[in-house]
Image (cartoon, rainbow, N blue to C red; front, top):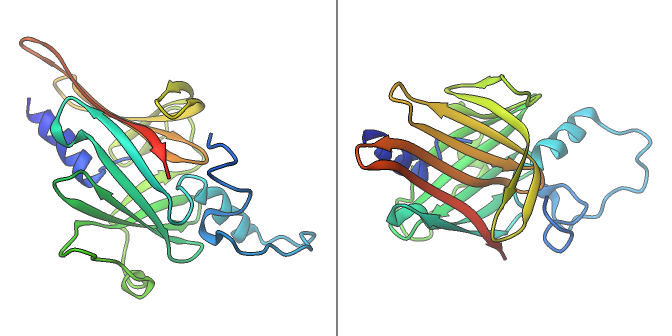
Length: 220
């Protein structure tokens, strides 16, 4: 049962690691929403291209996603995505009990977490200046994403999963898993163009399986 608390912590802190239609995400990088793109693409910058590729694992600037939960009270939550530039993004997660702030940086072939903490007050925000000198506390995703690859305590167990959600059915979903000695596990599901679309915790208890899930339901 102690792993239930770990899942609850994951729900609050997002200790892990998640195809959007054209009405939600336009054909521009997530970090540069509504900016005009240069007409001349003959001399592309590899670093810019990589940043654009990594940005596909987050929603666009200002997007609010609602997640439907089952199993515990705080498995329902919503997130708001805030791009500070093309490499730094904040995700504010509110489950009705606490709002967590998670800050990310897009680096060479990986996305790292710079901080994850509860909001200190209503309207608490994080600026680019706040993040400039922060060192990563963990890796969120590292590339290439291939079955068997390990990302800190997590392992990539699938890259082509089909996942049904209230929002839509996703294909080519990436699944990361964290396992425990007693057989319990956490799983996190990612879809390109969205990021994390589902969280799952499963354990075997004396009275049968115990499962907690959070799955994406809508985006505004």
